[in-house]
Length: 559
Image (cartoon, rainbow, N blue to C red):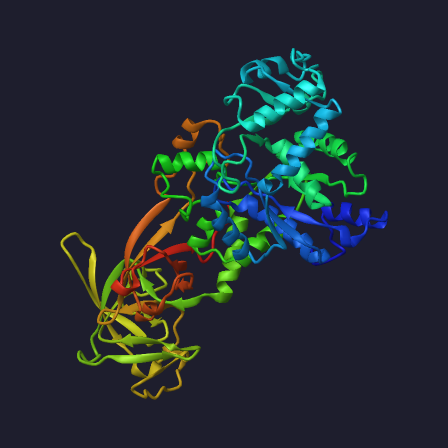
């Protein structure tokens, strides 16, 4: 959206409206979540679209919470939703609630009753559903459809006063019981719910349905372009019908128009709140902020930079047709950002003890990293390296007997001998180090004088390491995809459970260089040759209990 020569189809519509005389100052957008759960990456796409349109045209964007159902615990999710939007880098002009407009919505309903376009129906929900039939069979009109206007006004007022019990009657729009679009077959506008609302308290005994409130809230707020995912495409004729009828009250108001875009779907991922809640109940994931799922709070906990989410939304673009986005595209963008901002450190997961035979036992040398002078690495006679970095194989390119390698930010060493246990596993490797080969990236507190290396001392491989005297014990969580299958039927819970990746989370103990003691929440680190990590909220820093989440690998093949 930063390049006017590359417009998405929504912008093309807006640009065309401006050419036809629509005033730019009347452009207005909104993001209208129902606060009944945590937002996910699909919502991030909608957030980016609406708020970036506001930024692009320098016009306001409202945050409107759709809080029309008092049965739901909306209050719990409002703060997290606002935090998610701010974390993504956006802010809103006005914070609104559908409940702010309950009085106006009620007045609009009265107007529709007065013009003969709405009626009170005493039938049960079951009978109403049966009478709607199917798109290919004509519906059956309610016996109450032709009630007199005065009777409907009286009954609707009694509904509001709380005279009737829940389920006794509803208010329906009078549209077309033969329409192939089921949403137009006399939809319900109000139902009786005798519950306290977190904002309006006990003022109301009737509450508007989503289809009735949504468009009228757009109308009241003077939203010019109402943008939503294409699951609401079938609702559009009803949206337009309501707006057309209500606009007759005041023809000078802006008529909002609804436009749909494709939902975001990724491989090996499920975004459905219903299914995620099911996985939480089954204890497959630990909560809504589990780093293996793509809720915004989960991605933030895992360590995804907010900028990478926005760039991902830019990359996939905006279109009308649903498609499946490969998960690796998201990881590639995350990796690109982490490579710029991460602090590089050394961590050993599967340790093998290395003994430097020509290094004094009592000596500990401090190596200062030139690019980060706050990072000091202790070097001594005994260090840990990764087990996979030593082998007896002939063509092995890292440490092996008689071959030289460089210890990262330190010295060149050569393996002399080794020791095995009864099981045949390596327990120690004995090496010789070369004091005049200190890395150009470091300087020592011992003022080591480096000599110019000759060709014989040059090495092809560098391995990471950690001092056995001064290290930080940490836990690291390695995440894999939660599902083995690319695409899952979210209506089939058996299939979902069958395709759970049992290895989606593994926890390891590891040894880290002491610099990680300075880690703070949301700091990102590159663990050399392992991946990108961030400190998890389960850590207890004062107790020196550090837990790091793997964000992404250093490099991953496309799958």
